[in-house]
Length: 197
Image 1 (tube, helix red, strand yellow):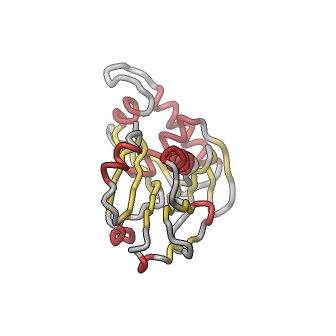
Image 2 (cartoon, rainbow, N blue to C red; image 1 turned 30 degrees about the horizontal axis):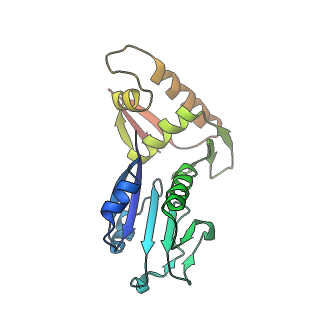
């Protein structure tokens, strides 16, 4: 399953980005759409150039934004998430991959970071397995999905195979969420999974 990646830019580099980042599901938008589409639970890449002078203040954006720019003076809250161009193609791709792999995902009082499940209200935490992290991250990003989708695309189990593997993973995730006393809940309705508060 491909990770989603939102890219905001005014440059006409869609074909280049599509070939460079073919391992990702890309959504490419104009810079003026940032406020409407920025997602705290997804990787957001913002590419600005000298022509984008009205967009120098990025201090309000989260750690889930990677800024790529040739501008020297920018107001951005996380200096480690700024890439100054020019960059080699390999360096650019490697930095984007590192950024996506170390992305923080948040939903209400819940935060996921580096296989760590954290309650932001009380600082309680526990660790998730890689597969639990992938299931919970996907569910937070989509808010609702089918059990079959997770079985086929995350657990790599064909839909016609009878197994309780998904239920076992969900049970462990719910226990860990209860342990850290989060308000977030995973609900099952028919063959759908929902994440709610």
